Image (cartoon, rainbow, N blue to C red; front, side):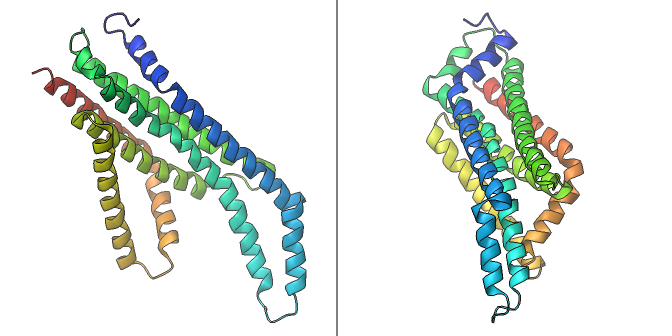
Length: 259
């Protein structure tokens, strides 16, 4: 049982509630990582590589003059997909915060907390600490996987891959933080997630429209990667700003309910 407003006790409770979600996320991530590893071994040493080589030989000297370039890009695209996609599944860990918020609403835990010595500062600090640990875990798992795949294949982890992955992580952080805030504020998981999806969809649509209007057609992906590379050095500041916003939201929501 949690003793008074013990920070460690409250932190333990958060992770205890999310243990099934975290375990499921890790299993899914490990499954995709294993599948990608087997597929990459097949690409380099097994049937997938042999099939591509056979198709490339069969197309040589035919009406398909650019077959070498096509198969090179096919191999490259497959490799990058298997290297990056499983890493993205590590970001499921970040969503565990919304699961905790939903369970708190279903059990009216936040109302009970007002009968304890827990202060708004302690409550916000615990929520922020949980999300810091989830973010660090997501970042480490994803980049460790890409590093190991790069090490095994001889194509080491690049700056573009790290910056691109980190940009996706920041977006997931934003979604998770908005979700937690509105779930707790509205005291309803479905309504909170619906509002969060609406905000993210509007923001994504606005960004996509801006990119489409400012860059030549077909260059959107390169532009996004360039933006990710340029923003990567500022990622710690951006992440700190998001965490500070989450702390403030949790603090004022909890304080408002004291009235």
